[in-house]
Image 1 (cartoon, rainbow, N blue to C red):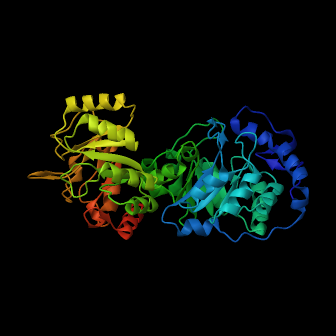
Image 2 (image 1 turned 45 degrees about the vertical axis):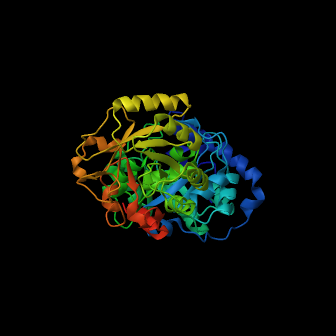
Image 3 (image 1 turned 180 degrees about the horizontal axis):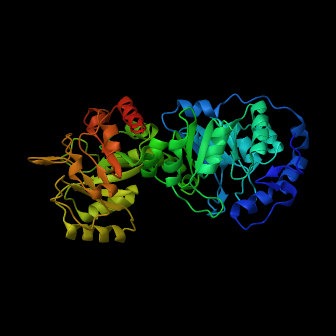
Length: 473
Protein backbone atom coordinates (compact mmCIF):
# COMPACT_ATOMS: atom_id res chain seq x y z
CA UNK A 1 0.00 0.00 0.00
CA UNK A 2 1.17 3.53 -0.73
CA UNK A 3 1.31 5.34 2.58
CA UNK A 4 0.07 8.91 2.80
CA UNK A 5 3.31 10.18 4.27
CA UNK A 6 6.16 10.21 1.82
CA UNK A 7 4.13 9.51 -1.33
CA UNK A 8 5.60 11.35 -4.31
CA UNK A 9 3.10 13.68 -5.95
CA UNK A 10 4.48 15.86 -8.73
CA UNK A 11 7.91 15.40 -7.16
CA UNK A 12 6.74 16.59 -3.75
CA UNK A 13 6.00 15.00 -0.40
CA UNK A 14 2.24 15.00 0.07
CA UNK A 15 2.60 16.12 3.67
CA UNK A 16 4.46 19.26 2.54
CA UNK A 17 3.24 20.30 -0.88
CA UNK A 18 4.88 23.34 -2.37
CA UNK A 19 2.51 26.28 -2.91
CA UNK A 20 3.55 27.66 -6.28
CA UNK A 21 0.33 29.55 -6.76
CA UNK A 22 -1.15 27.56 -9.63
CA UNK A 23 -4.74 26.37 -9.38
CA UNK A 24 -3.62 22.75 -9.78
CA UNK A 25 -1.14 22.94 -6.90
CA UNK A 26 -3.72 24.60 -4.68
CA UNK A 27 -6.18 21.79 -5.36
CA UNK A 28 -3.69 18.97 -4.83
CA UNK A 29 -2.45 20.57 -1.60
CA UNK A 30 -5.90 20.04 -0.06
CA UNK A 31 -6.00 16.32 -0.84
CA UNK A 32 -4.09 14.83 2.14
CA UNK A 33 -6.51 16.38 4.62
CA UNK A 34 -9.51 15.29 2.54
CA UNK A 35 -8.18 11.74 2.27
CA UNK A 36 -7.69 11.59 6.03
CA UNK A 37 -11.28 12.75 6.53
CA UNK A 38 -12.60 10.18 4.05
CA UNK A 39 -10.58 7.44 5.77
CA UNK A 40 -12.24 8.33 9.06
CA UNK A 41 -15.71 8.58 7.52
CA UNK A 42 -15.49 5.35 5.52
CA UNK A 43 -12.98 3.42 7.64
CA UNK A 44 -14.91 0.15 7.87
CA UNK A 45 -15.77 0.19 4.18
CA UNK A 46 -12.12 0.70 3.24
CA UNK A 47 -11.17 -2.44 5.15
CA UNK A 48 -13.43 -4.53 2.93
CA UNK A 49 -12.59 -5.77 -0.54
CA UNK A 50 -15.05 -4.78 -3.23
CA UNK A 51 -16.00 -7.09 -6.07
CA UNK A 52 -14.41 -6.13 -9.41
CA UNK A 53 -16.43 -3.90 -11.70
CA UNK A 54 -18.69 -5.60 -14.22
CA UNK A 55 -18.86 -2.55 -16.51
CA UNK A 56 -15.87 -1.72 -18.67
CA UNK A 57 -15.40 1.89 -19.73
CA UNK A 58 -12.70 0.78 -22.16
CA UNK A 59 -15.02 -1.68 -23.91
CA UNK A 60 -17.89 0.83 -23.96
CA UNK A 61 -15.68 3.40 -25.66
CA UNK A 62 -14.29 0.89 -28.14
CA UNK A 63 -17.79 -0.13 -29.21
CA UNK A 64 -19.25 3.35 -29.62
CA UNK A 65 -19.05 5.06 -33.04
CA UNK A 66 -17.96 8.25 -31.31
CA UNK A 67 -18.32 7.95 -27.58
CA UNK A 68 -19.23 10.50 -24.95
CA UNK A 69 -18.34 10.53 -21.28
CA UNK A 70 -20.87 12.97 -19.87
CA UNK A 71 -20.12 14.58 -16.54
CA UNK A 72 -22.21 15.34 -13.46
CA UNK A 73 -20.63 18.66 -12.45
CA UNK A 74 -22.02 21.08 -9.89
CA UNK A 75 -19.17 23.62 -9.77
CA UNK A 76 -15.63 24.25 -10.99
CA UNK A 77 -12.73 26.61 -10.21
CA UNK A 78 -13.15 28.35 -13.57
CA UNK A 79 -16.94 28.87 -13.43
CA UNK A 80 -17.82 28.72 -9.75
CA UNK A 81 -21.29 27.31 -9.05
CA UNK A 82 -22.62 25.91 -12.32
CA UNK A 83 -25.92 24.34 -11.27
CA UNK A 84 -27.53 25.45 -7.99
CA UNK A 85 -30.34 22.87 -8.26
CA UNK A 86 -27.86 20.02 -8.74
CA UNK A 87 -29.52 16.58 -8.84
CA UNK A 88 -26.84 14.10 -9.94
CA UNK A 89 -29.25 11.17 -10.19
CA UNK A 90 -31.65 13.04 -12.48
CA UNK A 91 -28.73 14.24 -14.61
CA UNK A 92 -27.22 10.75 -14.67
CA UNK A 93 -30.48 9.23 -15.90
CA UNK A 94 -30.53 11.70 -18.79
CA UNK A 95 -26.90 10.93 -19.63
CA UNK A 96 -27.64 7.21 -19.52
CA UNK A 97 -29.60 7.61 -22.76
CA UNK A 98 -26.67 9.09 -24.66
CA UNK A 99 -23.34 8.28 -23.00
CA UNK A 100 -20.80 5.48 -23.22
CA UNK A 101 -19.83 6.44 -19.68
CA UNK A 102 -20.73 8.94 -16.96
CA UNK A 103 -18.18 10.96 -14.99
CA UNK A 104 -18.92 12.03 -11.42
CA UNK A 105 -16.82 14.67 -9.63
CA UNK A 106 -15.93 13.63 -6.10
CA UNK A 107 -13.69 16.56 -5.12
CA UNK A 108 -15.61 18.52 -2.50
CA UNK A 109 -13.72 21.76 -1.98
CA UNK A 110 -13.25 22.98 -5.54
CA UNK A 111 -15.96 21.13 -7.49
CA UNK A 112 -18.59 20.61 -4.76
CA UNK A 113 -18.57 16.92 -5.63
CA UNK A 114 -19.10 13.92 -3.39
CA UNK A 115 -18.42 10.19 -3.22
CA UNK A 116 -22.07 9.85 -2.25
CA UNK A 117 -22.98 11.39 -5.61
CA UNK A 118 -20.86 8.68 -7.22
CA UNK A 119 -22.72 5.95 -5.35
CA UNK A 120 -26.15 7.38 -6.14
CA UNK A 121 -25.43 7.82 -9.85
CA UNK A 122 -23.94 4.32 -10.21
CA UNK A 123 -27.08 2.80 -8.71
CA UNK A 124 -29.30 4.74 -11.12
CA UNK A 125 -27.60 4.14 -14.49
CA UNK A 126 -26.58 1.26 -16.74
CA UNK A 127 -23.31 2.56 -18.21
CA UNK A 128 -19.82 2.61 -16.62
CA UNK A 129 -19.19 5.37 -14.09
CA UNK A 130 -15.89 7.24 -13.83
CA UNK A 131 -14.64 8.65 -10.53
CA UNK A 132 -13.14 12.02 -11.41
CA UNK A 133 -10.91 13.44 -8.73
CA UNK A 134 -7.30 14.38 -8.05
CA UNK A 135 -6.28 10.88 -7.04
CA UNK A 136 -2.99 10.54 -5.15
CA UNK A 137 -3.69 7.67 -2.75
CA UNK A 138 -4.95 4.10 -3.08
CA UNK A 139 -7.63 4.80 -0.50
CA UNK A 140 -9.36 7.06 -3.00
CA UNK A 141 -9.39 4.20 -5.52
CA UNK A 142 -10.66 1.69 -2.96
CA UNK A 143 -13.41 3.99 -1.81
CA UNK A 144 -14.39 4.76 -5.39
CA UNK A 145 -14.74 1.06 -6.18
CA UNK A 146 -16.61 0.32 -2.95
CA UNK A 147 -19.14 2.99 -3.89
CA UNK A 148 -19.55 1.68 -7.41
CA UNK A 149 -16.97 3.31 -9.69
CA UNK A 150 -16.00 1.36 -12.79
CA UNK A 151 -13.11 3.63 -13.75
CA UNK A 152 -10.96 6.36 -12.24
CA UNK A 153 -8.97 9.34 -13.45
CA UNK A 154 -5.20 9.51 -12.98
CA UNK A 155 -3.55 12.80 -13.93
CA UNK A 156 0.05 12.86 -15.10
CA UNK A 157 0.15 16.58 -14.35
CA UNK A 158 -0.08 15.51 -10.69
CA UNK A 159 1.62 12.09 -10.49
CA UNK A 160 5.19 11.02 -11.08
CA UNK A 161 5.66 7.67 -12.80
CA UNK A 162 6.30 5.57 -9.69
CA UNK A 163 3.13 6.69 -7.94
CA UNK A 164 1.12 6.43 -11.15
CA UNK A 165 2.26 2.82 -11.58
CA UNK A 166 1.40 1.94 -7.99
CA UNK A 167 -2.06 3.48 -8.34
CA UNK A 168 -2.61 1.81 -11.72
CA UNK A 169 -1.69 -1.59 -10.24
CA UNK A 170 -4.17 -1.06 -7.42
CA UNK A 171 -6.84 -0.01 -9.91
CA UNK A 172 -6.21 -3.14 -11.95
CA UNK A 173 -6.55 -5.30 -8.84
CA UNK A 174 -9.87 -3.58 -8.12
CA UNK A 175 -11.11 -4.11 -11.66
CA UNK A 176 -11.12 -0.37 -12.38
CA UNK A 177 -10.32 1.03 -15.82
CA UNK A 178 -7.96 4.01 -15.78
CA UNK A 179 -8.41 7.20 -17.76
CA UNK A 180 -4.91 8.68 -17.91
CA UNK A 181 -5.01 12.43 -18.41
CA UNK A 182 -2.31 14.44 -20.18
CA UNK A 183 -2.07 18.11 -21.08
CA UNK A 184 1.21 18.38 -22.99
CA UNK A 185 3.62 16.36 -25.11
CA UNK A 186 5.90 15.37 -22.23
CA UNK A 187 2.97 13.93 -20.29
CA UNK A 188 1.73 12.17 -23.42
CA UNK A 189 5.09 10.48 -23.93
CA UNK A 190 4.95 9.27 -20.33
CA UNK A 191 1.38 7.97 -20.75
CA UNK A 192 2.37 5.97 -23.83
CA UNK A 193 5.44 4.55 -22.09
CA UNK A 194 3.36 3.65 -19.02
CA UNK A 195 1.00 1.62 -21.20
CA UNK A 196 -2.10 3.76 -20.66
CA UNK A 197 -5.02 2.23 -22.61
CA UNK A 198 -7.35 5.24 -22.34
CA UNK A 199 -5.62 8.59 -22.79
CA UNK A 200 -7.49 11.81 -22.13
CA UNK A 201 -6.13 15.01 -23.63
CA UNK A 202 -7.19 17.91 -21.41
CA UNK A 203 -7.71 21.02 -23.51
CA UNK A 204 -7.78 23.04 -20.28
CA UNK A 205 -4.48 23.87 -18.60
CA UNK A 206 -5.27 23.38 -14.91
CA UNK A 207 -2.32 25.56 -14.00
CA UNK A 208 -4.03 28.71 -15.30
CA UNK A 209 -7.47 27.39 -16.47
CA UNK A 210 -6.94 28.50 -20.09
CA UNK A 211 -8.52 26.38 -22.86
CA UNK A 212 -6.91 25.45 -26.17
CA UNK A 213 -8.73 22.95 -28.40
CA UNK A 214 -5.65 22.61 -30.58
CA UNK A 215 -4.16 20.53 -27.76
CA UNK A 216 -6.21 17.58 -29.02
CA UNK A 217 -5.28 18.31 -32.64
CA UNK A 218 -1.57 18.50 -31.78
CA UNK A 219 -1.27 15.54 -29.44
CA UNK A 220 -3.73 12.95 -30.73
CA UNK A 221 -1.76 12.08 -33.90
CA UNK A 222 1.15 11.00 -31.69
CA UNK A 223 -0.92 8.35 -29.86
CA UNK A 224 -0.67 4.70 -31.01
CA UNK A 225 -3.76 3.41 -32.81
CA UNK A 226 -4.48 0.73 -30.19
CA UNK A 227 -5.21 3.32 -27.48
CA UNK A 228 -8.54 5.07 -26.88
CA UNK A 229 -8.24 8.86 -27.19
CA UNK A 230 -10.54 11.19 -25.24
CA UNK A 231 -10.76 14.93 -25.83
CA UNK A 232 -11.56 16.67 -22.54
CA UNK A 233 -12.69 20.19 -21.62
CA UNK A 234 -13.75 23.18 -23.66
CA UNK A 235 -16.34 21.28 -25.72
CA UNK A 236 -19.44 23.46 -25.91
CA UNK A 237 -21.19 22.76 -29.20
CA UNK A 238 -21.57 20.23 -32.00
CA UNK A 239 -19.29 22.11 -34.36
CA UNK A 240 -16.38 21.57 -31.97
CA UNK A 241 -17.21 17.88 -31.74
CA UNK A 242 -17.08 17.58 -35.53
CA UNK A 243 -13.84 19.55 -35.65
CA UNK A 244 -12.09 17.25 -33.18
CA UNK A 245 -13.77 13.95 -34.15
CA UNK A 246 -11.01 12.97 -36.63
CA UNK A 247 -8.56 13.09 -33.72
CA UNK A 248 -10.56 11.57 -30.85
CA UNK A 249 -12.50 8.38 -30.16
CA UNK A 250 -14.64 10.09 -27.54
CA UNK A 251 -15.31 13.33 -25.69
CA UNK A 252 -15.59 14.13 -21.99
CA UNK A 253 -18.10 16.97 -21.53
CA UNK A 254 -19.50 18.49 -18.35
CA UNK A 255 -19.95 22.22 -17.82
CA UNK A 256 -21.59 22.94 -21.16
CA UNK A 257 -24.35 20.45 -20.30
CA UNK A 258 -24.99 21.00 -16.60
CA UNK A 259 -25.12 24.78 -17.02
CA UNK A 260 -28.17 24.40 -19.30
CA UNK A 261 -31.70 24.41 -17.90
CA UNK A 262 -32.66 21.44 -20.10
CA UNK A 263 -29.83 18.91 -19.91
CA UNK A 264 -31.57 16.45 -22.23
CA UNK A 265 -31.95 19.09 -24.94
CA UNK A 266 -28.30 20.09 -24.47
CA UNK A 267 -27.17 16.47 -24.90
CA UNK A 268 -29.07 16.09 -28.17
CA UNK A 269 -27.74 19.35 -29.60
CA UNK A 270 -24.17 18.49 -28.60
CA UNK A 271 -24.19 14.95 -30.00
CA UNK A 272 -26.40 15.33 -33.08
CA UNK A 273 -26.26 19.06 -33.68
CA UNK A 274 -29.42 21.16 -34.09
CA UNK A 275 -31.75 18.83 -36.03
CA UNK A 276 -35.29 19.92 -36.85
CA UNK A 277 -37.98 17.46 -37.89
CA UNK A 278 -40.40 19.64 -39.82
CA UNK A 279 -43.99 19.04 -40.86
CA UNK A 280 -45.03 17.32 -37.62
CA UNK A 281 -48.75 16.55 -37.54
CA UNK A 282 -48.95 13.80 -34.92
CA UNK A 283 -47.90 13.56 -31.29
CA UNK A 284 -46.25 10.17 -31.75
CA UNK A 285 -44.05 11.59 -34.50
CA UNK A 286 -42.83 14.40 -32.24
CA UNK A 287 -42.04 11.84 -29.56
CA UNK A 288 -40.18 9.63 -32.04
CA UNK A 289 -38.19 12.65 -33.25
CA UNK A 290 -37.03 13.51 -29.73
CA UNK A 291 -36.26 9.87 -28.91
CA UNK A 292 -34.13 9.58 -32.05
CA UNK A 293 -32.07 12.64 -31.06
CA UNK A 294 -33.71 15.61 -32.78
CA UNK A 295 -33.82 18.85 -30.83
CA UNK A 296 -36.30 20.92 -32.88
CA UNK A 297 -39.78 20.29 -34.22
CA UNK A 298 -41.43 22.16 -37.08
CA UNK A 299 -45.15 23.01 -37.13
CA UNK A 300 -46.52 24.27 -40.45
CA UNK A 301 -49.38 26.77 -40.32
CA UNK A 302 -49.52 27.53 -44.06
CA UNK A 303 -52.94 26.39 -45.30
CA UNK A 304 -51.67 25.28 -48.70
CA UNK A 305 -49.35 22.71 -47.13
CA UNK A 306 -50.50 19.07 -46.82
CA UNK A 307 -48.79 19.18 -43.40
CA UNK A 308 -50.71 22.19 -42.11
CA UNK A 309 -51.82 21.86 -38.48
CA UNK A 310 -54.47 23.73 -36.55
CA UNK A 311 -53.61 25.61 -33.35
CA UNK A 312 -55.31 22.84 -31.36
CA UNK A 313 -53.26 20.14 -33.07
CA UNK A 314 -50.13 22.20 -32.47
CA UNK A 315 -50.89 22.50 -28.74
CA UNK A 316 -51.14 18.74 -28.38
CA UNK A 317 -47.92 18.16 -30.34
CA UNK A 318 -45.98 20.77 -28.33
CA UNK A 319 -47.16 19.23 -25.05
CA UNK A 320 -46.19 15.73 -26.17
CA UNK A 321 -42.42 15.98 -26.71
CA UNK A 322 -39.32 17.75 -25.32
CA UNK A 323 -38.48 19.68 -28.50
CA UNK A 324 -37.92 23.33 -29.29
CA UNK A 325 -40.70 24.16 -31.71
CA UNK A 326 -40.55 26.41 -34.76
CA UNK A 327 -43.70 27.63 -36.49
CA UNK A 328 -43.65 27.83 -40.29
CA UNK A 329 -45.67 30.60 -41.95
CA UNK A 330 -46.18 31.95 -45.48
CA UNK A 331 -47.13 35.65 -45.83
CA UNK A 332 -49.45 35.47 -42.83
CA UNK A 333 -50.69 38.11 -40.42
CA UNK A 334 -47.97 39.34 -38.10
CA UNK A 335 -50.44 39.53 -35.23
CA UNK A 336 -51.56 35.95 -35.88
CA UNK A 337 -47.96 34.73 -35.88
CA UNK A 338 -47.14 36.60 -32.67
CA UNK A 339 -50.25 35.26 -30.92
CA UNK A 340 -49.40 31.66 -31.88
CA UNK A 341 -45.78 32.15 -30.87
CA UNK A 342 -46.90 33.25 -27.42
CA UNK A 343 -49.53 30.55 -26.99
CA UNK A 344 -47.24 27.72 -28.11
CA UNK A 345 -44.03 29.16 -26.59
CA UNK A 346 -42.30 28.80 -29.94
CA UNK A 347 -38.50 28.89 -30.10
CA UNK A 348 -38.69 30.40 -33.57
CA UNK A 349 -40.92 31.52 -36.41
CA UNK A 350 -39.91 30.56 -39.95
CA UNK A 351 -41.02 32.72 -42.86
CA UNK A 352 -41.44 30.88 -46.15
CA UNK A 353 -43.10 33.50 -48.35
CA UNK A 354 -42.30 36.91 -49.83
CA UNK A 355 -41.65 38.56 -46.46
CA UNK A 356 -39.20 41.47 -46.74
CA UNK A 357 -37.14 43.44 -44.22
CA UNK A 358 -40.03 45.78 -43.42
CA UNK A 359 -42.23 42.76 -42.67
CA UNK A 360 -39.54 41.28 -40.42
CA UNK A 361 -39.22 44.53 -38.46
CA UNK A 362 -42.97 44.71 -37.92
CA UNK A 363 -43.15 41.04 -36.96
CA UNK A 364 -40.39 41.52 -34.42
CA UNK A 365 -42.33 44.42 -32.91
CA UNK A 366 -45.48 42.28 -32.76
CA UNK A 367 -43.55 39.49 -31.05
CA UNK A 368 -42.11 41.92 -28.51
CA UNK A 369 -45.59 43.24 -27.81
CA UNK A 370 -46.61 39.68 -26.93
CA UNK A 371 -43.51 39.22 -24.76
CA UNK A 372 -41.97 36.65 -27.15
CA UNK A 373 -38.21 36.41 -27.56
CA UNK A 374 -38.31 33.80 -30.31
CA UNK A 375 -35.98 33.71 -33.31
CA UNK A 376 -37.07 34.93 -36.74
CA UNK A 377 -35.85 32.57 -39.46
CA UNK A 378 -36.15 33.50 -43.14
CA UNK A 379 -36.29 30.75 -45.73
CA UNK A 380 -33.89 31.73 -48.51
CA UNK A 381 -33.38 30.42 -52.03
CA UNK A 382 -29.96 28.91 -52.79
CA UNK A 383 -29.01 31.98 -54.84
CA UNK A 384 -29.92 34.30 -51.95
CA UNK A 385 -32.21 36.38 -54.17
CA UNK A 386 -34.89 36.70 -51.48
CA UNK A 387 -32.55 37.17 -48.51
CA UNK A 388 -33.29 39.70 -45.77
CA UNK A 389 -30.60 41.21 -43.57
CA UNK A 390 -32.58 41.55 -40.35
CA UNK A 391 -33.63 37.93 -39.72
CA UNK A 392 -31.94 36.11 -36.83
CA UNK A 393 -31.19 33.06 -38.95
CA UNK A 394 -31.69 31.77 -42.45
CA UNK A 395 -32.92 28.46 -43.77
CA UNK A 396 -31.63 27.52 -47.21
CA UNK A 397 -34.11 25.45 -49.22
CA UNK A 398 -34.53 24.38 -52.82
CA UNK A 399 -36.82 26.17 -55.25
CA UNK A 400 -38.47 25.35 -58.56
CA UNK A 401 -40.99 27.03 -60.82
CA UNK A 402 -44.12 27.86 -58.88
CA UNK A 403 -42.85 26.40 -55.62
CA UNK A 404 -40.34 27.51 -53.00
CA UNK A 405 -39.57 25.02 -50.28
CA UNK A 406 -41.29 21.74 -49.58
CA UNK A 407 -40.06 20.35 -52.89
CA UNK A 408 -38.26 17.38 -51.38
CA UNK A 409 -35.36 18.17 -53.68
CA UNK A 410 -31.75 18.96 -52.86
CA UNK A 411 -29.62 21.75 -54.28
CA UNK A 412 -25.90 22.46 -54.62
CA UNK A 413 -24.96 23.19 -51.00
CA UNK A 414 -21.66 24.78 -51.98
CA UNK A 415 -23.67 27.69 -53.41
CA UNK A 416 -24.08 28.89 -49.81
CA UNK A 417 -21.03 30.68 -48.42
CA UNK A 418 -20.05 31.52 -44.86
CA UNK A 419 -23.67 32.31 -43.99
CA UNK A 420 -24.16 28.56 -43.54
CA UNK A 421 -22.59 28.72 -40.09
CA UNK A 422 -25.76 30.34 -38.71
CA UNK A 423 -28.28 28.76 -41.09
CA UNK A 424 -30.44 25.66 -41.32
CA UNK A 425 -30.10 23.44 -44.39
CA UNK A 426 -33.31 22.02 -45.89
CA UNK A 427 -34.40 20.36 -49.11
CA UNK A 428 -34.54 16.63 -49.76
CA UNK A 429 -32.63 15.53 -46.66
CA UNK A 430 -32.98 11.86 -45.69
CA UNK A 431 -30.98 8.77 -44.73
CA UNK A 432 -29.14 8.64 -48.07
CA UNK A 433 -27.57 12.10 -47.82
CA UNK A 434 -27.87 13.15 -44.19
CA UNK A 435 -24.30 12.24 -43.21
CA UNK A 436 -22.93 14.39 -46.03
CA UNK A 437 -25.30 17.21 -45.10
CA UNK A 438 -24.24 17.05 -41.46
CA UNK A 439 -20.62 17.51 -42.51
CA UNK A 440 -21.38 20.53 -44.73
CA UNK A 441 -20.94 23.09 -41.95
CA UNK A 442 -24.48 24.41 -41.51
CA UNK A 443 -25.79 25.43 -38.09
CA UNK A 444 -28.59 22.88 -38.29
CA UNK A 445 -30.47 20.42 -40.49
CA UNK A 446 -34.16 20.55 -41.44
CA UNK A 447 -35.62 17.13 -42.29
CA UNK A 448 -39.15 16.59 -43.56
CA UNK A 449 -40.31 14.37 -46.42
CA UNK A 450 -37.15 12.24 -46.32
CA UNK A 451 -38.43 10.48 -43.18
CA UNK A 452 -42.08 10.11 -44.19
CA UNK A 453 -44.32 7.31 -45.44
CA UNK A 454 -46.93 9.90 -46.48
CA UNK A 455 -47.15 13.71 -46.10
CA UNK A 456 -47.17 14.50 -42.39
CA UNK A 457 -46.60 10.88 -41.32
CA UNK A 458 -43.07 10.28 -40.04
CA UNK A 459 -41.54 6.81 -39.97
CA UNK A 460 -39.84 6.11 -36.59
CA UNK A 461 -37.29 3.80 -38.21
CA UNK A 462 -36.34 6.37 -40.84
CA UNK A 463 -36.01 8.99 -38.10
CA UNK A 464 -33.74 6.73 -36.05
CA UNK A 465 -31.71 5.81 -39.13
CA UNK A 466 -31.19 9.47 -40.05
CA UNK A 467 -30.03 10.48 -36.59
CA UNK A 468 -27.70 7.50 -36.27
CA UNK A 469 -26.09 8.39 -39.59
CA UNK A 470 -25.50 11.91 -38.30
CA UNK A 471 -23.48 10.37 -35.45
CA UNK A 472 -21.03 8.69 -37.82
CA UNK A 473 -18.36 11.36 -37.43
